[in-house]
Length: 388
Image (cartoon, rainbow, N blue to C red; front, side):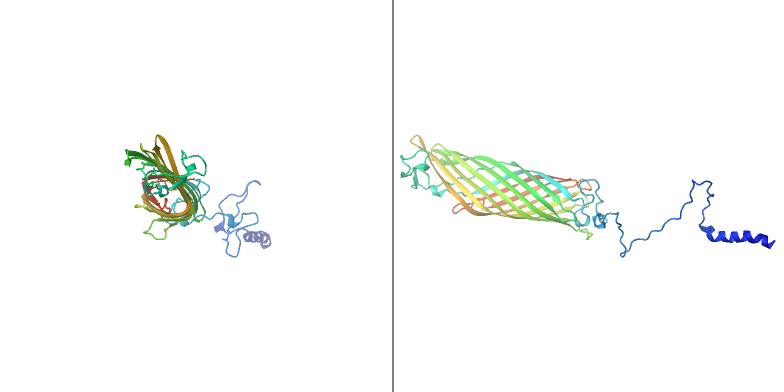
């Protein structure tokens, strides 16, 4: 009897060594066919340590994989599918300012004013001039000179009150990744004209005055923003920019009377120099509306040109003389301020709208040995920014 049971007991003992314990077994029926498989136990993967590399020869290099941004409470979530960047600058830049291209289009309603002291004293009475400078020569012959005593002492025309005018401004920029700032190209212009009456312009009474202005300004700057997220009670964006700027200012005045048929004075300046800009946005009570402010300063080194002319009636015949101030080196200083409200309607700030008031002064745009002129631009502006 013992010899009969020894074989089954030995087989049962061997089966117990290879079968899993009852606590870890699954209550599933044995496979009925070769097509059914027994589920394998789950694999436990260890997290890679600093001594092991998580990459393999068939996987991309770790440094080529973009790291997701670290967001703190109050930061904007990642902006997906809104341009070439998948994430905003996070802690390194203000929320919603993703890397890539952006554009600003601005329209302003500007009131220009020119404080002019142009002086054409080189056309003093009795000045000896060659016959080639006169519309009607005194006599024939290129070497003939004469004395003209019919002109006024000098030409000191004022600038008429200039009209309110529209002023476009276009900005195109590119934001660099990792909060490294952005590059911006900017262009703006102002063009205006106005008319006025000059009492006692000549011996026959009043005269009419017309003035024109054209201003062109362009700059190429680099800038960065600093968003203070580490301070819980400070939610403000500071911006600083610097680069090169170029400016051109032209204005002139023309007066007409019955004895002095025409008198004109014009000034042109063109220069290049450094520019610096500081700006700030401060949200109002965590709303999409922010207070906005900006100050900027520019110094331009260039050349000034001035031209004066006068035409009088001389016995029924017009007689003209003119004088041009050749290219003269000059330095112009520009200072401007802006302030207003800015509105970003969505979290990703694809659009931003700013409404405010601006003031800008150009000093010494008409500076020469005996002349000077300053330019002031002020008015309302509306700016729309599109990031894509």
